[in-house]
View 1 (cartoon, rainbow, N blue to C red):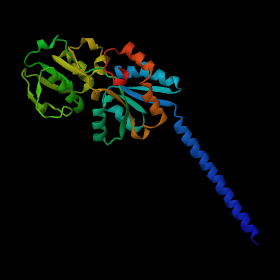
View 2 (cartoon, rainbow, N blue to C red; view 1 turned 180 degrees about the vertical axis):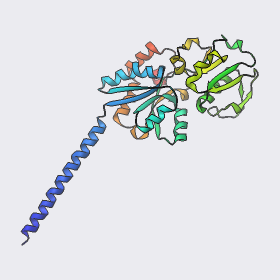
View 3 (tube, one colour; view 1 turned 45 degrees about the vertical axis):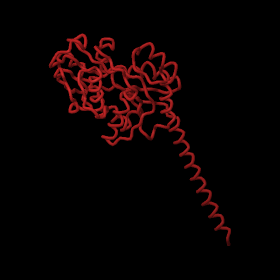
View 4 (cartoon, rainbow, N blue to C red; view 1 turned 30 degrees about the vertical axis):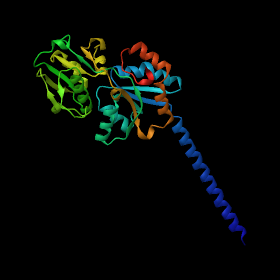
Length: 278
């Protein structure tokens, strides 16, 4: 009398085992697929950041078996939004201060995975050849995003063109914190990508290095170049959930390879570098 019940129970166990096996296979395939991601989409701003990826990073990753697509941007907003939305796997265009502030302001969970070189901020002019030629009332255009605006004002103070109020956090300086402006300079914040275009009108423009280069300017043409501190070096950013994935680690490792260093030495002389690339 127990035989039918036993056979029924055995059939249930067989079905359960089969379902479990299929689920395990499916999970294993999904996990393997995630680990074997071999197509990477990396964004960068136009100019030296994009070129570093094209000349120094893409070839290294391709040798490791990745297919790499590079996406070029012309502003400081879209690369992080694209990263957060998943159309990019990583980006290269910003320093850590900007990344943290932008992520906090927009509610994004983005993190850095490595430092990278950056073309220094520079003061450029078509009308003046040196700081000795600064005249009262000269107009200086500078980046308008908060982190780079603070950076630019600290740069101007370091070159004795203005003086900032004592005790103000140098990473959060604004125009309101300018205590002394002996030449009555007209400080005009502009969207960073547009700064090269202001050189025909302004006496000076403080231009982020990548946008200076993408516009055809040379670092050697700057009236003064920034002595870039580490917190203004570029970083590679990814979503926080991706930072420990094999492909993210491969991207970070690519920046430490001899091939990348050789590309820097050949094409990006004069760039500020992290310690591991000195």
